[in-house]
Length: 368
Image: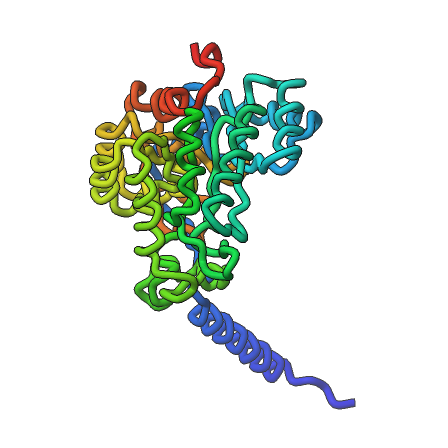
């Protein structure tokens, strides 16, 4: 039997290792941006804020299940975070809304609020708008504390003729007027972030989000330019000065706070919620802090998706003076954030006082 040459084995092993090493290096060099997610080596003081400094109202939440059992489960998370009141924007209308409110009244009448919704699909004529306003009036009498407008209005809803239903369509005027008459706010989400309309190239900072969520890409004809949809929203604000509007996601102007400030100055009936834009605020701590102080009576706390584990990032941005910490969704924000260290009087307005001024019938005793 032929014996193996040890030197040949050594050469073979070394050669195999070199191939493995070169392959690994090439693989690392070919790693795409989707996979690249480095951990910072920066060592700085860090805060862990799992409970808000003051009781807060989440003006922007969504809960499909509002059964008594579901409410029991929500309360434990809310208490742990110091959340005093949750505003469920997915109240729907009619019997479905009334059932939700009945369940709240049976269990936690002062901890949950429901906003009604309008189904805009198939809007026909001015009479249609009057009928929708009449249903909304009944929903408010049944306990709804406001109206939530989803982004489908302006993006997807079509009228009876199959045309895109614009946010400022006159057939909807009766709905906005009814909210003013009943003294309830309208929380409205219009359009999407502007980069969704921009070219999907190396200059688009939402490239990763569009790559991983391709259905979010928009164009000037799918369904309309960003600027047009936002203008339609502002047209409604101006046309109905007695209606109180809460512009969700800071009206997609959290990346341009000077412009947002101009809009707030122009339209005194508009407030803004910070839901889903905390990463925009955390990357400009000095400018954002100055904005919150200047417009402290016009900004409301909101989170949007109900994920209790994500709330501490909001608390950390708003309350701490921390530096260079990550957001929880890389595809939303691949940059790091900084704390705004807001003054207590500003925090109180952001967390609950401004919401108490806009939403009728909330239990103020929860904030003493």
